[in-house]
Length: 308
Image 1 (cartoon, rainbow, N blue to C red):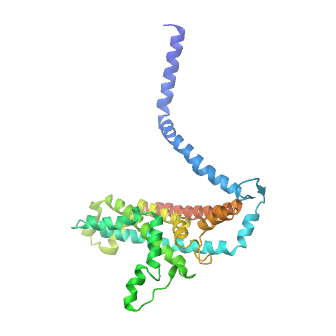
Image 2: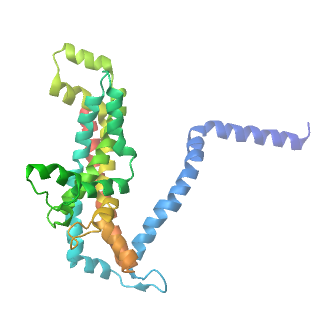
Image 3: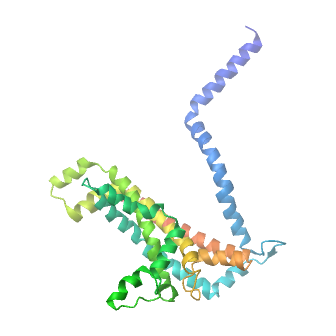
């Protein structure tokens, strides 16, 4: 065997030894790198770019003018921004009913009785329907002249109010429409989680006398932590970036009473050509979302440590 062949064989052995030693690091990195590259390109980079645009004045074309914190100062004195932020708080608080309703519907549907599959399909239906369709359907429901609710109440002599034309009720009418598909989504998560609940633990708890609310809180819910975490986080994100239903049902009206941050950002960027101002709104929305989710994660980790 020549000296060159000896060196070549030793290098191969060294390389294979290195791969064997570090395979627990190399394999995950090899799989994660393509996904992380795509995530960086299509998520992280646009976020950084949007934050950078919030410090300039730009119409979407032409040169950009550096204005520093002027866009954020203008936001502080903008009544429409504060109204949109208040509406987002309403969305956030009331949308958290979706995980609760989804849980109880999932508990109801998690039974082996005749016809339960048909009932499940009816509850699944809102999840597969487009948000645009949901908005159009509920806009028809709320129509004070020809809507379903007005038609049902007319024989009773009750006049149904024009919810979407009322400054005080428009936001809550849209939130109710949004709760319909969001509850269905949370229900699906909990149905999946209930399939992984250990029946032996449930049976042991029943033998010890646990039933009803006590069984749910102490035995079932701790096993549904993963489903609850996903349901709450997705619901929070959905509430903060609510856009579709507002655009379809009211367009932010009447008089900006149902406006939200996502739609106000869109309005400034597309119709007013204020890309910098819209980016400032997007940055504020992004920070609110991050802070809320970080707070929720900290509470979840704290509860996890306390339960060990």
